[in-house]
Length: 513
Image (cartoon, rainbow, N blue to C red; front, side):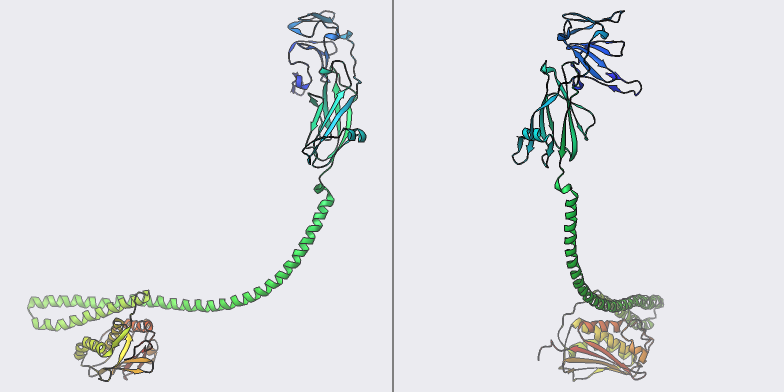
């Protein structure tokens, strides 16, 4: 190992870097700064400045080539003594005659290149000797070069090194006189090969061979220029196609924009209509809650007051007055029942769970049931509830339960707004493709502004002739049920002229009788 005190670097020397042996027994330094090393394969002189070795073996006048460990000495006169298995070798360093250079040339013995077509190395020695340079075409970037140092004295102790100028800076030792190089980058280089004789001296007559590695065609500027021109040509071609398609798409887009604008305009109208419907539904919902809270409050209070009065009269045993309270209690219960029933049926229509199952209905039976329900109530108010005989043979195509709800609400409304001495009557007849049902009263009638919004829950119908309060929910339910039957409901009225409700049921599905 060699240590440089200035740089602090430590360099190791062994057989791979030029020594003839890795076993060193002794080291002596002479007056000139050279180190003399005894080994088991001869004597070595090392120049620390140039980092070069010279080797001396048995034929150089030594007692032997293998020395002993720690068998060395230096005399007062500067003479060196090294002990070996064959005796002692003694000499003065200044008396050793050393030839500073080796003038033996290096000759090429063979040259071969890798041939991709055949997949093997092909000899090219004559071509190399003729041209004096190595030319490698892609992808042939591999070659083998054999050479020899023209020294025939102990040929087994020769060493070689090479350097590829332009790619490598330092020398690389070779273990044999064959150089194998592959995958060399494209470019121009100079291959230097030198040999070292048996005494460690390098030959001054190096072998220099120019090496030219051609680059692949795709790495030349003209190739990329050609590629660029081709790309520009293809780009221009596609540009023309793109422009043509763009114009075509522009026409289609204009048509699509026109169509979507029209659809958007329609959608905005639909959204506006839906928004108005939603506001209407919200108002209806709020009004229904108001109805429910307002209308149930009075029956509940009435029930509470009546219960107190009944308790008091029972305590006083005034049974004649209890009979009068019974009618009042029945009326209150009937009103609450009608309100809750209408609310339930209307909620079903809003949720889409009210399903109608139309069939042929005899209006005589339907009218009789409704009149039976309100005959007593009309009698109490002094109202005549009548019907003619002419509609005994009239039939309607409707759902029985829905028809009962519609007739009950219209008759109840007529009784509520007809004063004592008034008259209510029902009519029915067939007219072309519809069946017409009318509920007519001689009541107090309605103003035109109320009549215009009669089937909307945001309008209060007012207070009945006997102080009855109405919610307007019954008429809204009538409108919903007539819509389910694909029919119509109309109202005709005037102040003090009574009111007529006209129901029109389609007869398209009514079987012939």
